[in-house]
Length: 153
Length: 439
Image 1 (cartoon, rainbow over the protein chains, first blue to last red):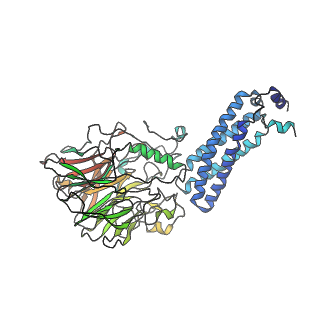
Image 2: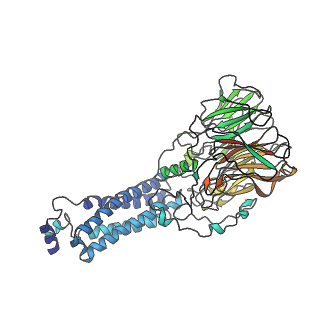
Image 3: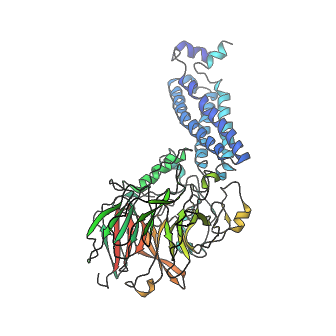
């Protein structure tokens, strides 16, 4: 709380909502969606679901890389985020999710069933769990737009 | 891995190393012949690729064995894919390009399309999709070159039966009034039968031949995918050789499960049809061997459910165990990813006796393994109508210092017993003759 207040007092970027907060949900939603379509493919072998997974993972990665850059800038620009473990934990979880999903994207280029069963779906589960965990830690990261919810319940 | 233009996708860099490590130690000679060694499928994170840069011939020529010589019959062509010598000594050259653009149903497609265009280079800026006629001259060099048929739709196979020239466009077999000696076709074509083409049209070259008595046509129709990853509906009557009645256009599937059959040719003096077939990719650098086979009527050769007989492809769903049980293995493995597109049996008498009745195979080459395979014309000896021994490199030098100077496609034996090779990346037609014989 104290950090959040100080953060606000410093006035850094308090004017604009964080770009990171705008971008971060997109890969999370995409990776969760890819897990759902992987499950649908493994249940049906219907190729449309495999293609959905591929596009969702690709879109998640595209926006995920932008979000990862925004997070890096936040980290560099705001020492307050670097203090305490939760900021680092958030970064590790999110970057971890991106790495896993990058490998997942490559596995999903296989032509057919083995793109998903078993490796692709396993990676989709791991990637989705990491992304959700990153989302869970986000609200504890002292960041403009996030912290405000904590100080003004 | 030299300048493998290995791939746009962000990542490849660090990840390409994964996968099986034994590729380079693989003894290629075990991949030839009737019982090739089939390693376990292994792809790694990315299919291994090595796309050579296209540099062209720059005045040089391919290499042929001692006792032979090679010369360019025509240069500066636009994607010459096939050659068809006529009885009077004239030569038809089929220039052809794929025109269709495949739908982008997954992110992988544009990347693969880019890799493919890289491997093909610029490939001649002039008009393509036409048939040229090279008029014979005493010296071997053609005296004249003219356009016989223009504005075709990605033609590939041609066969002359009596006074009818059949041309297999990618979407139909056409019949033109024509006979050897003519310099023009005698009017508009008649359509014999439609062939499966767009909107996807993945394997687009339609190979064509006629039965020895001329009563039936045989046309190769390649699959619409690597391993059925576009669904079974897109494969109707594909990955098959059709038997077509040239009079009525009635057709039936003569043999199936042949992923991309090309080089359709009857063995000289027999009623046995042979073909070379491009097998599937992305199961590893040394899988699945491409092959040359006699084609048994009604036979099923496995694609997509299994390869080399009854080895199931793990990627294909739904599986069809009954079809797999019915699949028969082909005759002769050419090794993996050589991309055979041309086949000609030696019927001349200018080459030494060991060539009699043997097979020349034009191997276009592909990028689906780290050490390039194919990119040459090989010769396989035949005894009693069956292939024997290991393939022998016959025309080589299409790759030099990791760069592609050309890629052989269609092959044929001309009236004088010389081997003609279409080179669709070098944009050249080559003629290999015996240096012992007078030209």
